[in-house]
Length: 581
Image (cartoon, rainbow, N blue to C red; front, side):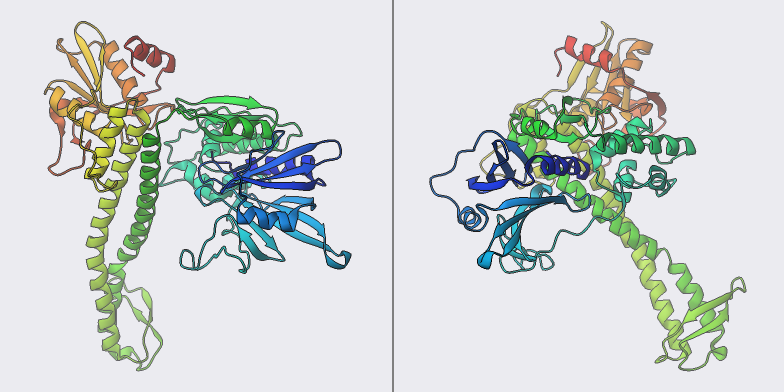
């Protein structure tokens, strides 16, 4: 469960109302990552539970006191010594970051009021609970040594430094039109990422919700004036809903029965395979979420985490290489400067820091920086060296960028395969594939199963059959083992998804069968849930697999592109009739 900044805003407001002024009379630690305070309020008692487990960090109130181990941890004993009988005087959120601070006041020596803090960093796998006083760390649940992080050390005695502050416009307080104006017209990455990077307080799930409400396709690469108007309206709705005195909370539950996030507003966009539960209280929503029993196998969940981490690394590497290639593309400028310097050597004063000379190619003036330690000719040679270095870098960086893009496309296809995997056998095949790719370590104990999973087979009529691959091994099987030259082959355009094959005894498949195959190709893809999804259709004879390419990778020509919005009810009914989940 990933609680976004706007959800933490609602949670902080709830806790302020419920426990500000309450007194801590008992402290316990049910586990090494969980802590609770038993609180006395004016008319009753309540338990504040804080869990910084990396999977689903959260904080909530409960009537039930958790069980304690026989021997309390050293951290629990420390908090008992310092905080029992203390009063919670303030609860605040750091901006719209996922950080909550509880201020606790006690009567110290000489009857002086002493203030100490519990800082809850609910930041996913890096979640932590830190006990501080006067800006110095007394102790924490997780320690981060200087060897682990030279910038931010979390150990007793060190000053407390919060995680790097988010940069961007506040999604809650900034004018919606100002937020939308900060968005570029064209984007070269997923449009939701651009919105998240321009703002603070939201992540992927809320960004998807906003674009859905604005009726902007997630594959869009350009924002029209009408798109901007609709997006500003969606942001205004979010701001109004979150600040409502009685907001409605929506828990988004995945098909594996895990809570992905909690929205502080009624959700309109529900990803395929997910469901929602609504609550009138953020505390009720969190308590419901933590009690869910996940249906997804641990193996599948682990592989998803590994692949997601590899995707993040590949995306970061791609951005770095794009920046390096942009710099390398300035090679011609260096050559022009060098040539112009050589043509104007007699005009340049020795020991000059710069000079203005004519561009020998178009006559325009060139302002050139010089090294005063070099002669004019040596300065020209320096620019020639820069030119040669950048020219070499162009080819090398372009090759590395292509490899990074191929790896990213492959990882995204594996990520989709894991989403569609419905059996242990299919998950094992994906693990085997990742082991061969060197992404997951090979295990000497496990051997590949001789039994292989089968692609989805739909008998559309007595003349036509549709095949669908649900992982890369199945995709290769559908395309190159099951497929014949005159069969129709379909795949979403530039979007990770399944290979779909239409085999027919007729000269051409029925128009209804082709339309169904187009919808299935869009449905079994990363674009599922979108509208006007582009699907390429070609003869199987036009599909080739380059030698040495990754599983599931193909190239094709002479395609015809269809645009479809899958009919969810029709697809689900069709799959259920065939017993396919």
